[in-house]
Image 1 (tube, rainbow, N blue to C red):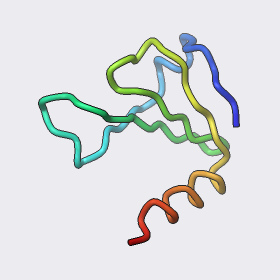
Image 2: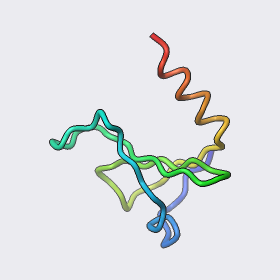
Image 3: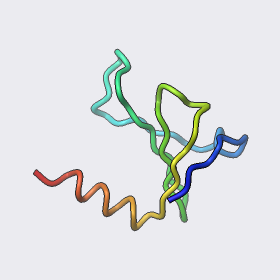
Image 4: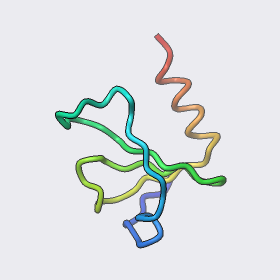
Amino acid sequence: MNIEVVTDSAAQLAWFKSSYSGAEGGDCIEVAATPRTIHVRDSKDREGPILSVAPAGWAAFVGFAAQD
């Protein structure tokens, strides 16, 4: 797991917010996928740090989070 400082290249990523996020703000994350890395950031702090994980790690996290 890595935490990166936002760079110009990070600003060029295609960021997606959860469909469960409302227009009111709140606690949301944004995700940008590249072939080798999944980038995650706080939607309220777009200039803040970015968590970067391998696709397999992200898939494991999403699978765990989706369990009842």
